[in-house]
Image 1 (cartoon, rainbow, N blue to C red):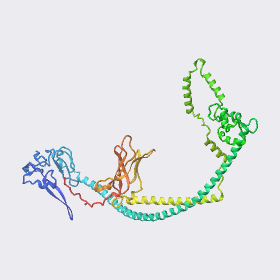
Image 2 (cartoon, rainbow, N blue to C red):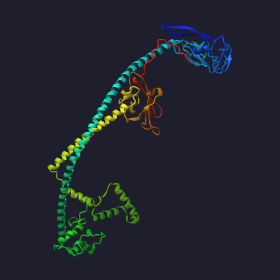
Image 3 (tube, rainbow, N blue to C red):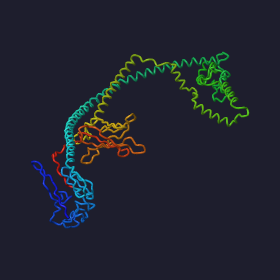
Image 4 (cartoon, one colour):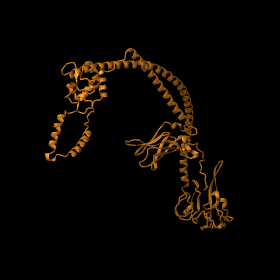
Length: 536
């Protein structure tokens, strides 16, 4: 049996809305009414077969596509149309028809189940209308704000271009000034350098004279010290009394070696001793200092006594280690000495002596008035040059920043330009999330801790028809044994610019919801009624 129904359809006309009744089989949308004519056979919508019209909605599935049973549950793949007058039309699977559960707000799906269904379409329509009205108001206000942002961006862009031109002109003047001051600086530094060199040379000559005088005085002292018999000569035997002068340091300072140091003579007078002095002064140890050990060293006799006492205390006579074991112990002791920090200073070198001589010479005397004046003039020229260079670098930085900002993609009408150099935060129970558009995204523990990068600006990543609806931030801090963190920011229309939510749908991949008037589109006008859109 064909089940026909009278379905109310609101029609919008110029003076208001009227309703008419359109007769069609139960479960059929108005858009497919022409395929269900009562006085003609019914052809399945997939064209597979034709059946008598009285087999439509007879609770038996004849068509493979289920189109002959739009109002019953006979076909598993069929669809039932809910007219839902006063709300939005909908389609449900035919299997839900008369299953005792109210799926359509107008109750038409439970016409034969006995279920106690209430028609809630008008109430649902009213609530949806209120929500849509609110969204429309937000969109309208947001779009008005967007237009203001566009105007501000346009004005701001013109200002930036003007400022860029001014900076570029200023840059040329600064470059010329830097080159002028560079020439002045170099001209001032040349006489300064020459005057400093003259002063240093004079000081070096003065120090050399002082050292030569000290060296001659020491030579005289040594000559008198070596001349044991005070005959005015230094003999081979007298020289041999200082074993530290042994040329090959083999522990045997022979007569021949001593004679070699005395230029092949048995003894030399004060004049010849000057040439001998140059060969022995590095090694010579004054007799007055011979028994004084260098700082930090223990006299050999005391060292031997200490070792002997320690050995007698640590080992009974019968337990004295063999020589090989002693060697091992000595190695260990050496390691311990290094660990304990008992490091012995290396022997005094010529460099150390020279440094000591420099210290003995005292500080370099101050510059004379003329040299100091040249130094002051050069320093003034350097300061002025450095200031000019600094000013030039600052202008170059400004130019780079402006060029970057001017060329940046801030949307079709630069509506997103106001977000540049701004940051927005969202505080949750655990973290403070921070979004700096076109720069970075980060999170920081709410109760203290270091900041974690969730990505730096990558690109606009929305669909082709709305590419500026999604921001992508990439290459954040790496997760433990995982990828680098990244964040997707979805923009929605709003009167305020604010981060509304954040989540981590996948490991190390974060999602932020961000409202902004810049994403708002001009709202479409809609009637106070609720037309039925019945297309599948």
